[in-house]
Length: 244
Image (cartoon, rainbow, N blue to C red; front, side, top):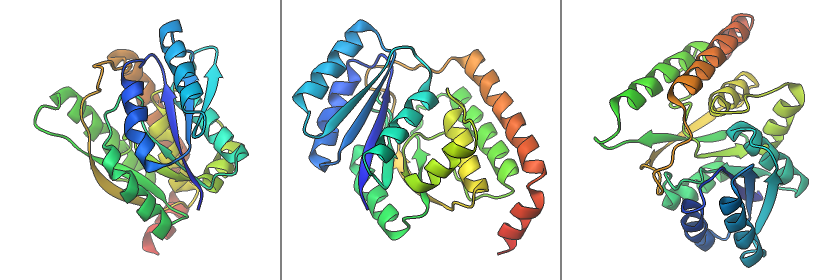
């Protein structure tokens, strides 16, 4: 196995410095995708790429396309560089870096499976955010006819890139905040099993969130509806898989 890290970045110039510092001890090649960030953030990313050139690669997107668009560009670069697996992690520092070895170990044991983070929140998590997540997971269970995916929104994952490459060649994925939901359901439809790992999630280091409550919730609702329609003609296939 040959594993890298993919980090989509949009205007997290403060947090990304800390993220890179915390990633460095793991000795994993890192693909940083600048998703049309501000001049300030772009400057920071270019400095990181220059200072850490022995283990980082910077992809520059001139226009902001969304989280999904950035991660997909990261996937394509990882495949071009010959990686077999990619760990997706957010640029705001909300994920538990010390769990990276657990994700790699699980991926080594199950190289054909998607290793997905199952977030553990503390009591301070906003109720609206928690309820919205529960609503999304309910729809994911409906659209897979399964409880195999414990959480469909956590951006801390390890992907088998051959499966991702096959998915990318078969159609379009959500480009923005609907990406994490879309890709995990479609990979499951493709026959990829999921390993769920508990992982603590904290608020962003820099307090910056790009989630737009109204706009992104509408986008995610549309994605659930689209996936539901895609699930309907897959019902026989999904039921057979469930019985097996």
